[in-house]
Image 1 (cartoon, rainbow, N blue to C red):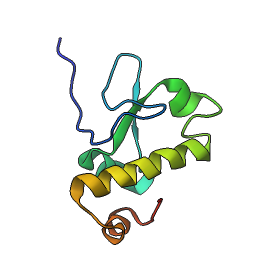
Image 2 (image 1 turned 90 degrees about the horizontal axis):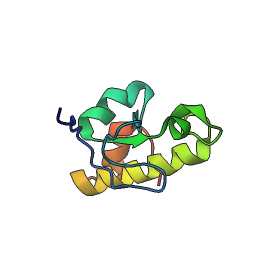
Image 3 (image 1 turned 30 degrees about the vertical axis):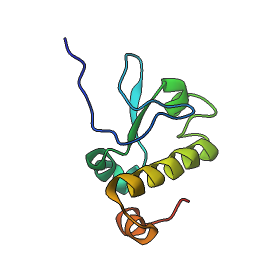
Image 4 (image 1 turned 90 degrees about the vertical axis):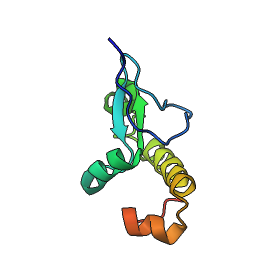
Length: 97
């Protein structure tokens, strides 16, 4: 069976990949009220469960790693969509850079 491709504009990073692989889970970089927008705009990454929400340094448990992803997500969105900082703030409410 073919692997389902998910829209992702993120480059691979320090602790994430930009494609779904067995054993990885999708993480919406801007979650909460921005979860669906993150999915639609390709601001998702794929993490091990340990880095998603199971470990002490997971993005849901360690603010430092969450911010690394948010900064990378903002930069990827600004590059891909050719947004300036104010346009990003209009979409996601905050500047992370």
